[in-house]
Image (cartoon, rainbow, N blue to C red; front, side, top):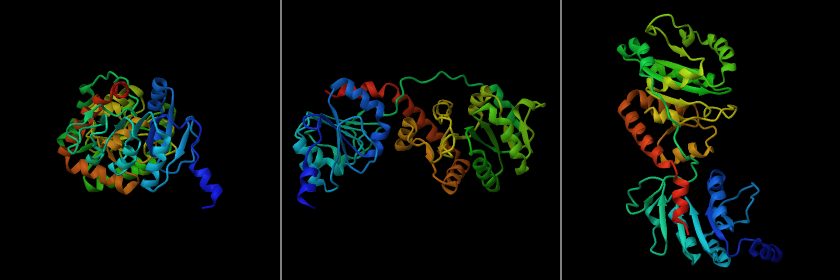
Length: 355
């Protein structure tokens, strides 16, 4: 490294020295935006120390730490932060935190290696066996101030009586967006070759419902449209129950064995994924690889309260697991509901612990 580069590397950006310093990787910072805004409103001197490379411009004074932890610790010493807030990093960064020589607050701690008597607080997003004495606050990045009120309409589920008597599973691809229905049909076709079941399919945008239905005819799967069901029960030979109205889209969560969250299957989908309603309805949720930076989705994935797949193979594996092991789905759904309740007001609770 040339001398000029060396001197430039060691120069601290304006506003970093003596700051309230956030230590985190770029991915965590990208989903913790509202929490960082709240910290700035409280302390007025936020700066960021990023542990890996990011090309995103920051509204706050920031620097990238060297990969070598000893060198990173030296940089932290030079900053002399007023307080250090560590966001979700593993215990390997403990030497860096100790070097700060100031109050340290570890948020969303992951392992026992983060524990040190010098830390004022260690908080976690969920109970962790290795951290039995840690404060469990919920995830402050989840941005959940309240839970919506939902009405569970079990009456509508009676129309699937023949499916249930025939030991058929019900999988709900709910609120699908652009380019997602083809993936839903492909996954369903694989799943019914494993064990016969029924797909509930509901595009989010009512304007897309008719063209999606016309396109789906190519799959030659016997389909009942919600608006046109003329009998009390969905016939046993039905393969797809197609929902075109917003109201039953939410009511039918209660009828399914599992939910695949629309808006997570393809990056082209424009609608925000909804995992709150199916969790409140007591259903296990599967999340695809798209739009996982949405704060609540990212928090749920990190907490392990949803099943996740990034491609058709892993998504099918999730579906197969829930078909074969419904008790595992029930356990996951219960954990997810407990986790979701804990997220409400988490940001305010964490802020109150940091001084």
